[in-house]
Length: 106
Image (cartoon, rainbow, N blue to C red):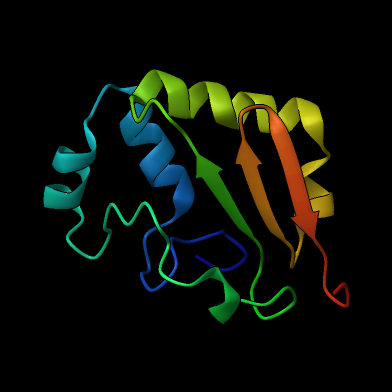
């Protein structure tokens, strides 16, 4: 798992969760399969993860929690920014708007 983005607090690669969503698994099915992953829509307190203290965090704030909506949001993210620009950053994607806090920003 060296260099792969993982779900915070777990060893589960984010790509595994995206693959699960792509094949139509529900959030509940994913949390049964990977019990260390939770559906924490509030992400706890994002201030606990300042830019630069991790490989990078992307928060998808979706009104529709379906797999199709999550896949579309990730696709939208890829069109809005270069993934390399998210290294060490905290990014929030909500309603087509992307906010990014980079290490060293206030």
